[in-house]
Length: 203
Image 1 (tube, one colour):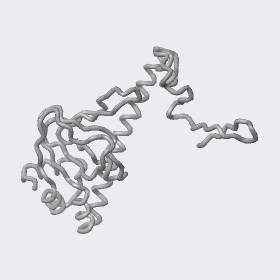
Image 2: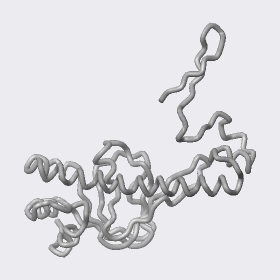
Image 3: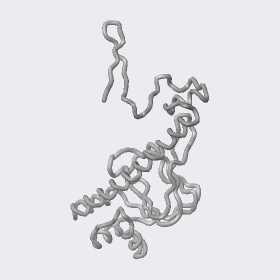
Image 4: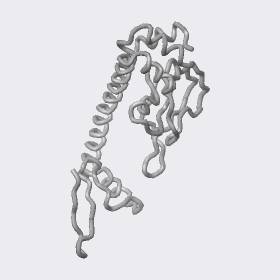
């Protein structure tokens, strides 16, 4: 159960914007405040997801592995940010590791607790899901800009517009498949047809 101070903090977040006060109080009754020490793993990539966590204080790092096994911090989450909310929308396993890089306080809300909100007030539940979806959309727009900037830099430095092509050109790494294509390009598959290859593009 969250304190009144924590509830007031949640009310100021866009994810909980527009919810009636009694709905927020109900969420606070189900949520659990937890404290995590520095350098502790909160979520592991690939594991089942059944909760989301709001950062009340401290910092979380979202870590994703690259194709070559290197770990990259793709986001740092501070007070007011949420970890694990995507699983509420797509019902998929964790997409990345989440680490506490400093002592952190979290308000943890399990998916089963949100089901109780759905049963009691479908309109408030719908609003909550829409708020979460909007936050994910904002994050994706920022990611689009970041990817464009990275590819623009690679093009400027190497003259190669294909990110993987640039990596191959600079490292001559044979472990990268030669048929790797720009993630934004149409997928290409080769099918056998009377002994000849047939180029089939999926749009």
